Amino acid sequence: MPDTRFKPLPWTRLQRGVPCYLPKAAARPSVDIHSPALAVMTDFQRQPPITVTRDTSLEDANKLMALGHAHYLLVADEQKHLLGIVTEAGTRGHRPLAAAHRLGVKPAELVVGDVMISKHDDAEVMHLRDVGSARVGNVLAALRELGAPFCLVVDHDEEDHHVLCGVFSLSQIDRQLGLTSPSEEIAQTFSQVVSSLGH
Image (cartoon, rainbow, N blue to C red; front, side):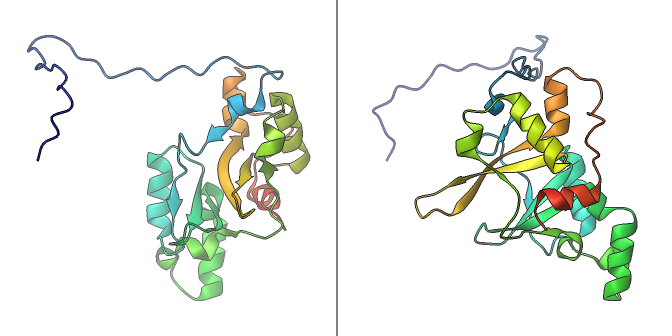
């Protein structure tokens, strides 16, 4: 039975011959190193991360990264537990070839679980409680100390479990600061991404 408590909104049809444009991307507010750190954090509640299972093929993972303009994918199980992370560097080049040789399979048969960076209990992440009072400069200093192109941010639920809530990406921060190229002080190599998630 239809709900009669609400009056329908007025509507009309698009007029022929009248242009209709796609929306422009909302401009991010300008930031500097003194701006709140949250101004440069990708909030997973507003922009959910792209996730895959460990059985996803590398071909599909690369397609997802290309479509989503992402440099990494989070790997999770059916219970939404983080299992690891897979990066562009991990799905192309010598790493897949080495993994295929080690497993005795063809490179085309590899799946994300064969090349992902496994999540560890001592993974290096930032905590939302610290981020809330920090500045962009503090984030850059932390990324420099980690030697990492990005770092995940976690919060805690009622049972004190870690809950992923965002990520800091060096390339995104550079764009928001108006820098034309990534900071040279932080090399963005696969091994350093591994170190950013713990040893």
